[in-house]
Length: 223
Image (tube, rainbow, N blue to C red):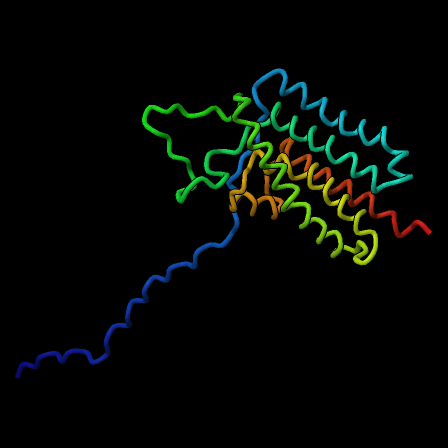
């Protein structure tokens, strides 16, 4: 008598579905180094500018010690002019879209309109320079003042000293950053996370912050 094989009651184990890996949240910087304008004047002024700023503070050192508030107030305009001149002469302006110009972030060119040169056109550099200085004084300086207070600067006294210190730090550290990066949020995320590549613009910012810190470190030792 022939017998037929009964089907196996044990079913094969189900094949596990491939699990998708969670999206990586690793922050990857996208900005590149900011080159100087390809002119002899830009390269020359890059070396002259720090000497001018240092000379200005050196010549005002005695007055700064004797009357810091009036001296720092008087120096705000020359420092702003020197920083603006550095931007105009040596640095390229922010790329299209870095300053808000529409819903897509980029300015649409009309048919037949030539794309403006962001490097050598003087008339196209004045407005970005003024906007950079305005953002520095209206936005960056108050934020730096709050940070100075949070890091130990007196809150109820020496308010003018702290405000002028924050203003000078903002002019020296952030005006060129506003000029070359605009107000693009991803770029400022890289700036706040200290992820920018090394160049003259970022070096000036780091030098200002490190110099301010080194100047404040010996204060508790002054009995």
